[in-house]
Length: 536
Image (cartoon, rainbow, N blue to C red):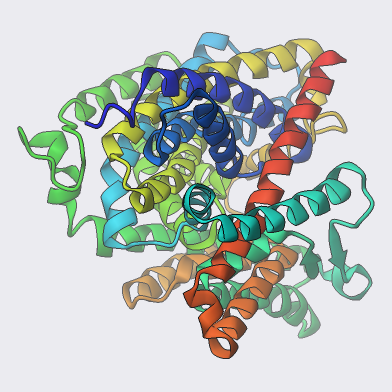
């Protein structure tokens, strides 16, 4: 291994950054029910600090940023699920050691699956991973090409200023919604003024984004508006159909990934877990992984009181869900980790007599694992472009993720102690995703739509249709899909009208800068808000 990729100073910088980002991510996830991708922020911080110290290279920066960002989405997975417990009963008391077992269990599963899945999603399928591409472009351009660097940082500055005006100073609106027209149907049609999401649409391209937008049309103007207007169902049933169909499409995609992609390659992907000296598709011998999974199952069974069957379902469900997360992030740049947690939660409830609190634990384990996998796959994509060693990145991921897992539990416990359980779901900490998990404890709201979605997605995936973005479009608010679609249209126009512009990489550089500007300022605002909340 090249010693200048995985260095002691890089791990120390990454560990400190992981603590800071995990703290801010926990607060912002609870306060704003959202979580900006940390990768662009940590790329610039890692590059600045290591270049200041001297004698560095792009690979060391990439490995350092992997450690620094790993804890952020771990905090998101915890914040998007566990607070639902207090929304149902503010007086519930949870043990910190139990929360630590849940969180670190999810982290370790995520670490295992990133090692196993990396080659399949990054190299074999070669998914776009727009955030990873943008991070790599930022490092390459900033290091080698002054003209392109100027283009990158000018676009980054414009997006950063716009984001500050939108989110901090409230001088420009965040969304333009047609509430007067179709709000009565439960639809949020319009656009979100987000340079980041437009850039993701541009980088991913018009085909996949077009499918995403098709899903939005089906969900909002087909199910919500069309179904109600035709008298097929009322608006409440329409919302249940929309969400259930979207979730079903995403679950079916996961099943399709297993059937078509992972199971036929199981010997290569999982061989390192069972066959001596066999790496297969991995970069590290994983023969220890089955034993660790058995230990995790025992911890879930006896420490968290999930029971044997629910513990097994949780681990198997995390395997399915993390593959869905890797695919979803790779194709769309979005990681609905709490939805993946809900899916496995419902499966555990269907086959066991798991309790209400323990069901939240299942969702948390899966959401944490999916959050980690989705985030680090972007880092691996950047590493593929930059020529970083996957093993070095994975070791950095281990350090950052374990630190982030421990810090996120401590911060959640501190918030609970300071504000009490009644703060969750209210004005202080709305935590909308956790509220959705709490609402789904009772089960899928419209089973026929869910089943239709699963079956349709399996068939479509097996015939190479990019169905996961179809499911996202059905499930997500319309304004998110419409914004991403704008980016796809711009890319289509550029490719047709001025192809030289993209062949020279200028379009992707501008998109990377816009994406980075919003995500960086978003993280800075999150850190400031976290400090303000702590100070109070």
